Image 1 (cartoon, chains in turn cyan, orange):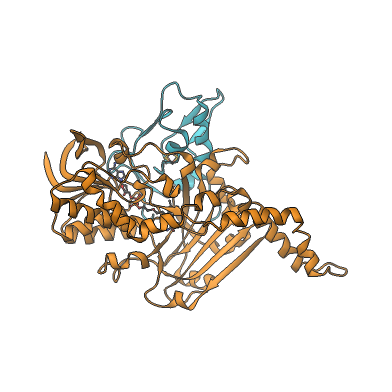
Image 2 (cartoon, chains in turn orange, brown; image 1 turned 90 degrees about the horizontal axis):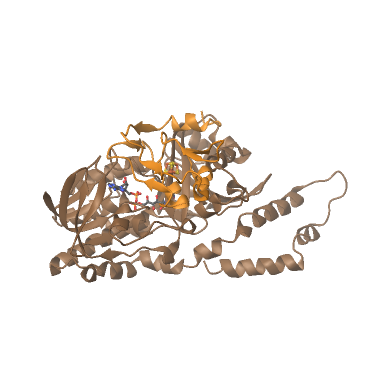
Length: 94
Length: 428
Ligand SMILES: Cc1cc2nc3c(=O)[nH]c(=O)nc-3n(C[C@H](O)[C@H](O)[C@H](O)COP(=O)(O)OP(=O)(O)OC[C@H]3O[C@@H](n4cnc5c(N)ncnc54)[C@H](O)[C@@H]3O)c2cc1C
Ligand code: SF4
C-alpha cells in the first residue's frame, strides 16, 4: 500500500541486520540537553522521543543511518558511529 | 598487515569511480565498503546527469543498469490549497545520447562495483573502516574490523559525514546550515501504469520537482522520478530549517502530507511502497567544501562536500563520479613522482578546477545564499496560486477584468520586495 502507513510499518519494509551494540548513543548526562531535542523533529525514522521527565530517548531499531541527528545535535551530545560492517540497514533500491 | 597501492574507503559512486580508474592502470586497489554490497547504504533522489561524465568512463554507459531516460521535466509551486505547474517537453530531451536518467543506487552501485572488480580492483564488503593510521603526519592506512591495512595513499569516499576525513583532520563535524536531509519512498507500480500516468512512451521517464507547502515553506522541496517499475517520491529539506520550530514539524510527517496532496495521491494510487530510506546531503556549496588533500590522503564525492542544490535539482552523483576519477588521476601523478605528500597530491585541486566540477561550484557559489530566502518557499507559491485562482474563478455574477485582478497582488511595496528577491535570485 502506498497509502499513509505508520512509521513503524514503513520501517518494517526495510531490511535490517542485527548489530551487537547500538551504534548511536546519547552521551551520559546529555539527555536533557536542548540540542538533543532537535533530533525529535529531524530524525526521518522518528527514533527520538521526549519522555515525561523531559529527557530525550533514542530507540536505535529502524535507524536509516542517514546522519541527520549527528549534524543537527552534534557530537558533544551524541556518540555517533555507523553499525559494524554488514550490520544495520541494507537498502534494496536506494 | 597487508599493503596495497591505494585504499579507498567507501564503495559509492566516488569510491567506485576511483577504483575503476586506478584498476585500469593496474594499481593494486582495495575498496572497503561497510554495506552487505555496494549500494546497500546509499540513497539518492534519483536522477543522474550522464552528459558531464560520459567521456570520463567511455565504456561504462552502454550496459549500465539505469532506469528511464528523462524526457519530461516538471516543476510545481505548491500553495496550501492549490498549485501551479510548469511542464517542459523539448525535442533535445528525446535525442540520444540522453542527458539524464533515473537511477536506483542499490542496483547501479552493485553493478558498477562488478565493473571495477573486472578491471582488477579488490572489493571487501561488510567492512567498516574504524581508524586512520597516521605516522609522522602522513596517512599510511586504516584499521577495519580489527585488520591493519596499509597503502601509499588513502582516498576517502565515505560519503557526506566522512568520518575518515574527520579522523585525518581534514574536516570538522558539519554545521546544520550546510546540510539537508532527504527521505523517500520507492513505490512500485506496473510499468504500463507509470507510462499511462506520466504520458511516457517506452523507456521515457519523467522528473518532477515541487516547492512551497511541500516543506511548509522550509528550505527544500519535493521530488518525483519515474523508474522502470516504481516511483521515487521524496522530500529534501535543510536541516537548520527543520530543527527550528516555526513551524515545528517532524520530518516523516512532511512526506505523509505530501503523499496526501491530491496532485500526488492520483499519481501513486494503487502503488505499493517497498522501501523507505533517508540520507544527509551536503548543500553548503563552495564555501563548505572540506580540505581536499592531506599527506597520504585525498577526499572525493560527498565526503568533500561535492553536492549542491540549485533550487530545481540536487546534483551530487556526477560530482562524485568526476571527483573520484580526478582523485585517481592525482594519485597516478603522485605515483609517478613517488611523492604522496599533500603538496604532490594537490594536483587533484588543479584537475578539479579545470573540470566542470569546480567550474560549477564557482558558478553556483551564491546559490545557497540566494535560495535561503523563505519568501521563495512561502510567499511566491501562495501568490502564484492566488493569481491563478482569481483568473480561473467564475463568480455567479460578473467577472472582474483580468489586469486589475492580477495587479491587486502587486502593490508598490510588493513589487519592491519582488525586485529585491529577483536581484538575489539573479546571482544563481
Ligand atoms: C534524497 C536524496 C536525493 C538526491 N537526489 C539527487 C539527484 O537527483 N541527483 C544527484 O546527482 N544527486 C542527488 N543526491 C545526492 C547524491 O545521492 C550524492 O551526492 C551521491 O550519492 C554521493 O556519492 P558518494 O559516492 O560521494 O557517497 P555515497 O553514495 O554516500 O557513498 C559512500 C559510501 O561509503 C561507505 N562508507 C561510509 N563510511 C564508511 C566506513 N567507515 N567504512 C567503509 N565504508 C564506508 C558507505 O557505506 C557508502 O557506500 C541526492 C541525495 C539524497 C539523499
Ligand atoms: S542516523 Fe538518521 S535515522 Fe538514525 S537516528 Fe539519526 S536521524 Fe534517525
